[in-house]
Structure formats: C-alpha cells, structure tokens
Image (cartoon, rainbow, N blue to C red):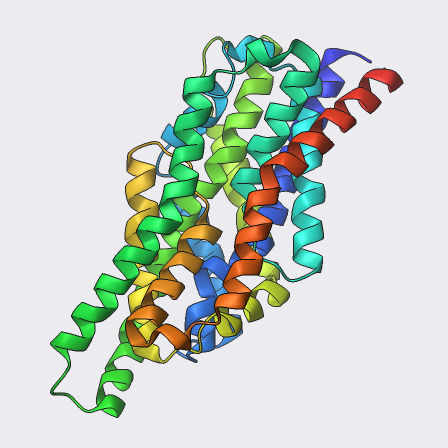
Length: 330
C-alpha cells in the first residue's frame, strides 16, 4: 500500500480518536454543572463544544511533547506505528465509555504508541526520560488536583461561613457558568493537541513537512473533530463523574470546576499532557473530602483508579497486537 494511503488512514484515525475523545471526555467539562443544575445538559454541551474548539487553537506545546518526547527520534514513528496506537486508544476509549467508566484518553494514546514502537523497533526506541516526564505529569496531576480541590473548598467554606447556605448556592450556581466555561476551554487546550501531535508526526515521517511544527490545517481539523464529539455527549460517564463520586451542591461544583481549570491550563502552559479525566475526578474527590471524608464514595474512586492503572499496559498490548496484524496484512 502506498505511503500516502497509510498516512491518510492515520489522519482519519486521529480525527476519529479526537471525536471519540470529545464525547468520552465531555463529562470532564460539564458533569459538575449538570449535576448541580447550574446549566441544562443541552446548553452545557453546546457551550463545551464551542469552548473546546477555541481552547484547541491556542497552543501547540502539548502536541510537540506528544510528537517528540516518547521516542528517541520522531522519524522512527512511522504511519503503521501511529495507526496501531490510534486503533488501540480508540478501542480502549469505546470499551470504557460502554461500561461508563472514566478513563484517560491520554494514557490510552501514549500506551498505544509505546506498545507499537516496542514491537517494531525494540525497547531502545523509547525515549525513557521523555516518557517518564509525561507519565509523571499524568500521575501527579490527579494527586495535585485532589489536594488543591480540598484547599479550594476549605477556602470557600471559610469565606462564606457567615452566609446562608441557600444564598451561597444561589450565587455559586451563576458563577459556575463561568467556571464550567473555563473548564471546557482548558480541556480543549490540552486534549485536542494529542491528535495534532500524532498527525504532525505522520506528515513528518512521510516527508510532507520538514519539521515538527503543527500546520494550521491540522489545528483546525483536530479542534473541529473534538468540538463535534463534544456536541454528542457521553451520558454514561457524565452520570458517573457527576453523581457517583460525590453528590455536589453548586458551591462544590464551582470549587471543582475552578480547581480543574487552573490545574489543566497550568499543565498546558508547561507543555505537559495531562488526563482531564484524572484531574476532574481528583478535584471532585478533594472537594468532597473537604466537605466530609465519608461523603466521597471511595469505592467508586477505587474502581476508577484501577481502570487508570490498567490503561497503559492494556493499550500497549493492544497497540503491539494491532501493529503485528497490520504488518501481516501489508
């Protein structure tokens, strides 16, 4: 099969991954405001879709990290490797969406790349320091979000300790519209760039671009794919994130949204890919813990963490398997 067709397949798969990432991770941006009834589901999804698009257009630092830090040389990641990684990530995202379990699209994509690269070039092709930096960001982000979520909720409790609960929630409901918008914007600024990095790598390996710089056409295509996916909505995961971890009041949703948006956008500015799923659930756990430790359904949290731990090994294995199948067909 000519290289141009394989690169075309990579681009289609990357945009499919972005679309699935959009509806898979819609819960990250809107679960809190839907759970607290600050916004109707329809309005929340439209707002999230638009701001996901805008956020995806602001930076390409995360895309360059995804494209250049996983392997020792970007030219080693050919179109077959990328196709295998994307197929693996798509399979995992659809599986976890089907069972209503929040999981990391970032982990899934990185795991797929690692598995496909190792099976094709060996472990020496992996840029260990770069992978560890990425994984460290992915692992530490929910821990930081939990801690800062606890602190932010505690600060709000102190600030409004002399104000009636109904008044606090009334004000928080209106402010949460802004915090949910910030969350959607920060989600787009980080997550859409992962597919940008993959497509840019494919174009670089095929000789269609001369350096690891994301073309504007790729930015627009990925932003539109995520926007379209977000508009579909992932209701299974929204129910898990919005209701099953901790039953939130508007003030809790406000704290969780603000904390998540700050954490994700900080990572984007540092060019670090993070899991928005992990950050949002970490924030909700921290906010719930500040309210009352037993208010958090820790059994649900444990199930999520188990899925997170399994993501990279499972997608690496699937990525390697898909690579072997594609090579056999070719």
